[in-house]
Amino acid sequence: MPGVLVVTEAKDGKLKKVSREALSIGSELAASAVSDMGGMVTDAASAEEAGRYGAKKVYVAALGPYDTETYTAAVVQVIREMQPAVVLFAGSSNGRDLAPRVAARLGVGVASDVDRLDWLDGKLRARRPVYSGRVFVTVEITGTPAIATTRPNAFPLQETSGGAPEVVNVTLESSESRVKLVDTKVPDAGELSIAEADIIVSGGRGLKEAANFSYIRDLAHAIGGAVGASRATVDAGWIDHQHQVGQTGRVVSPNLYIAAGISGAIQHLAGMSSSKHIVAINKDPEAPIFRVADLGVVGDLFQILPALTEEVKKAKAH
Amino acid sequence: MNSVVCISHVPDTESRIKVSGGKIDETGLKFIVSPYDEFALEEAIRLKEKSGGDVTVMTFGPERAQQGLREALARGATKAVHVKGDSSDADSLGIAKVLAAAIRSVPHDVVFLGKQGVGTDNGLVGPMLAELLGYPQVNVVTHLEIGDGKLTAHREIEGAEEVLQTATPAVVTAQKGLNEPRYASLKGIMAAKKIAIDVKSVTDLGLDESDIYKQRVVVVALEMPPEKSGGRKIDGADPAAAAREILKYIKDEVKAL
Image (cartoon, rainbow over the protein chains, first blue to last red):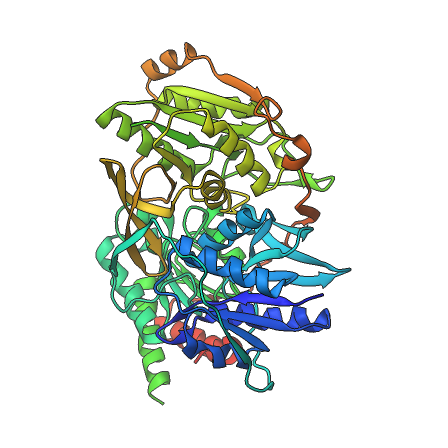
């Protein structure tokens, strides 16, 4: 097999975590196929970091901020040069925008948002949750290259001890973009996004009113997590849709999910039950959320959350 | 201003999904227009109400998918195209090829879709369609303004929104928040019954079935995840004690602090 290519994404001069995760699994796939992994970065500063996560060769295309058409042209150019058997994209907003466009240009299929990847009998096998995690589908990709986008938090990070990677500078043959980035709005400056957070603290209808999301925010800030929300609270206008976890929001799988005042509608459970650890706080002992919780606390969130926030602050101060 | 809205017909989000014989068991399932497609449709209808033109709603799917088209016509779409076929046997690229071929023969300035079909959640057809049509794409859109051959769209990304501008024709995929979809009125339902749906086959579009149903992405297994039984449950009557217990769990088992 002529190798694995991982198309990465950087933010503030560092590879995004979901890109490092993609490199980690890419490196494993390459090893099981007795071949090498290459990385593609869009700024030279990230080349060394891609090497640390196993890329033997790093293609550096000095592109500006993301835009679909320029990036598609660049990725296709690198694929034609490297001829990889597998191309992985981080399952970020940009990765999910880019991968299908690249695939359509090459006439191949994509497995998106995968949480398991194996190289088996010369083919890429990918597992992905469908119906928001109620069913897992395993697919085999037959074309070359086989393309997949990786689900954030699904693959453990793994650095390798290999030396510095070989750097190949890519000069873009053609670059034409019809979409112009006019502005970037950051509504909640400083707030983490639920998409890639390690810890999410989520609130539901049990909060009773919009202002009480402060209970959730306080704990999230203390613990270093993102603020999540149930659909009911988003539909009521208490919080922006960006925060919604569940079937018409985001499907998340953080290391720790704390649900407070969320009863656990099937669509919400589907969106968070693959979290590694789940703590639920609810006053109703029969709430369905307790069925998926590793630790369930039957009680008043208005008393328990502030107490927990204080405990977390104390623990962090030590 | 003419638009095309591509919709998919999916199991209701409340459905209990069952697997049988390596496929999703459709027995007893209620099908709905995929929720994100509803935002796409609403946006197209509002555009028509503002500046005239047609809204052509389109789907690739089996017989039952026609219900989705009827629903869309009842809400305000003016034309409908049904490409009949077993779309569940085609991968996203196959579906995009069918839609692209059908769209080419319909006048349009904008092509709308939901950002993903709820259920399968691939989120691939929109960008693939844009590539096949040679159009710019703006995905996961929460706000849109169109006029004078150009559009301005807000695209949701992690923790922020980008404001993007491009020329029409373009492909736009809708995110929740773009608008509040309307229900069909009785008058709309009656009027929709008079509109003839243009029914085509894959071969009518000049496409080769073996390419549409080509096994680019082959399903090898479908499995249900093990049912979680729930873990430890404690009484939180003493908030301080409960908080300490949660902290202990976070430290010892989650190892997050």
